[in-house]
Image (cartoon, rainbow, N blue to C red; front, side, top):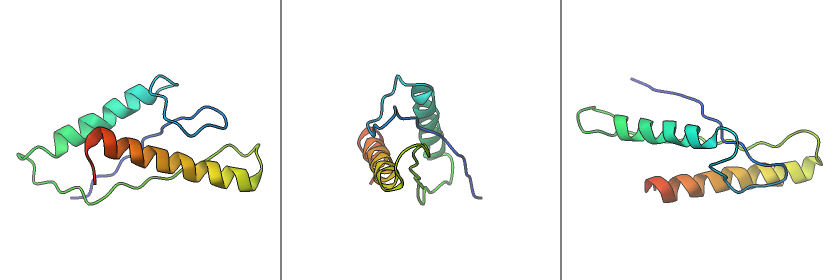
Length: 88
């Protein structure tokens, strides 16, 4: 069985650091935590094969800067998830 969901982490304008108190980020990360806790429970025969991250930036900025910012945001999210949830 394949499970899929989309969760959004929001960033302040021009920033790439995760602020858990910004917008709905705290609730989103709690949802992620619940998902990991529930589905990695041994009573389920569930294997986490991967997590896909996609960074983005608003279209108002310079295209080159937006690409850099989007990559920084994806990297910051990956680092946060690895550190907070002991993911490899």
